[in-house]
Image (cartoon, rainbow, N blue to C red; front, side, top):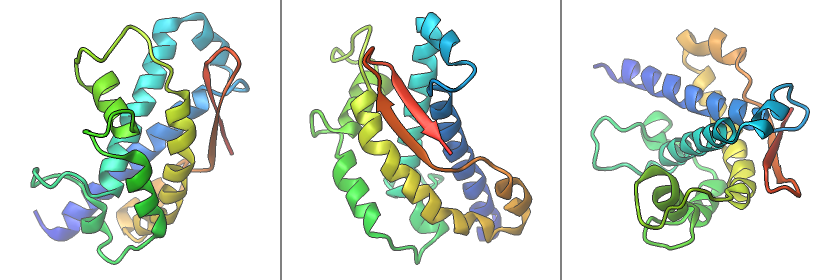
Amino acid sequence: MSSDLRAEKGWVVFDYEASMFQDLLSLLQPSNKYYQALLESLPLLNAVVESALLHLRQLVDILLSRDKREEDAIRLKDLLPNFQDSRLEELREKYGRRDNKGSPCWTLNKMLAHPTYERSDRYDYSSLLQEMAPLVKDLIAAVRPGILAHSRLNTAVANSPIQSVTTTSSSSGIITAGIW
């Protein structure tokens, strides 16, 4: 596969992950027409929250160029080799490592992505999203011009809803998010 095709495929995946993350967060805001239905269905609510978290995990792996073991892993350093932003180091510090108990990385691995004895039938991810979503959103916005540089993606990406996201936790412990 040519390096141009490889980069284009990487940007398609990055844009998909970013769009899904932000679209799922938007479902969790009270103004969303589906919000009440989510509150009435715990399985549906869990599915939306957990899906958003899995997309967050994928985005962090891409942004931090974390997966060195897989030759076909999508890494920001391959897509934008000259990209520099101090928020990447901030993301690395906030996200933590899989062996740092309580870090967002550890939490997503142990409480969501893998069947471990740390898991339960419930977990409140609101503080994780409050901590991580704004920073990831800012980095998506910073990286987005790189997507636009790939001509085959210009039309689709220019029309995609990658915008600003804020998250909060309501008194009921439900994660809410705003997108504008």
